[in-house]
Image (tube, rainbow, N blue to C red; front, side):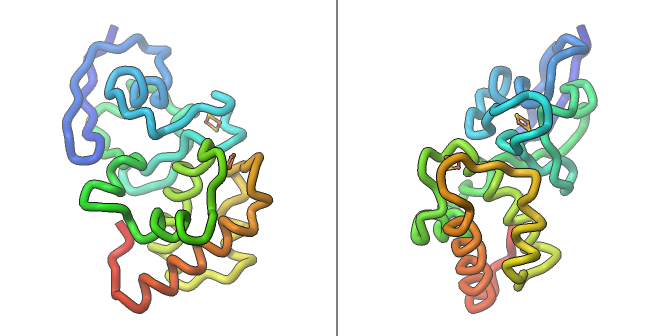
Length: 160
Ligand code: FES
Ligand code: FES
């Protein structure tokens, strides 16, 4: 077993973990933050997407021990002070149905908008290529991200 300390959404979690434990399972089962979903455990679906030291990663492709001393943001962290504008936009523009892919989609969108505040539809589609959705056909997700970008431009919102 290894003792690790991880900061998730500003809160420190210290636990003994097995070396084989995946970070997504640490987040869900040890930190009890179940907004990060598991679709495949093999890096294909994007449901487990989080921000890890400011970078977008799939947390099923990282071991929990690799997150020792890392700073992580999950979907719960975006809503710490009320819903984030991207979360609001997904609600308003019907960017979700079952919601399984939604946390990963929203974190991906926030990450994109940090570096590209006014992305084109093609740029959004390219950014989302590692995140799969079984329900929406993607168009409502893209509309929601463009809507969020417009609202954030008008309000001067800092993305994260
Ligand atoms: S659960 Fe990580 S990519 Fe599917
Ligand atoms: S809303 Fe159901 S998988 Fe995307």
